[in-house]
Amino acid sequence: MKFNSLIFLLLSVVSFANAGNFLPLAHTTVNPPRWEKLGERAVNFGLDRDEIFVTAREGRFTALQLRIEGAPINLHRCVVHFANGGTQELNIRENIGAGRSTRVLNLAGNRRVITKVVFWYDTDNDANRRGRIALWGRH
Image (cartoon, rainbow, N blue to C red; front, side, top):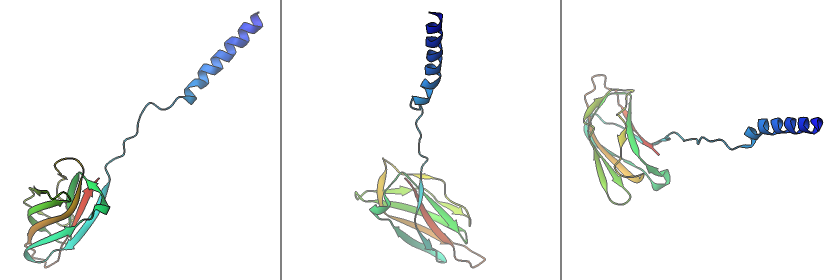
């Protein structure tokens, strides 16, 4: 009788010790937002307007960011055009130095398909370098 009780106790301890190995994990993993480069343009000297076309193939986005390279750019206005015909004007109006970027520009509504982004800018560049403006989208 003592032998059977000892075996039962031993098997119970081993079973409970291994039970945690077969339980599913209680936490869920959340994917961080993914940024994708949507296009870029070389900027001209003086006041100008440029467009970056985006296709539905790129997907839906929740936010944008403009990154500047080469020379500073003074951004005046930025308008996002969506596949459903709507538009959203993003309030930027700032001078952005080379190697810098705008703050994250959140888009109104849920994730949306962008067709193009139009931006107005000027360059007041004493070094006579041409800058580049890159459009990034967050999924």
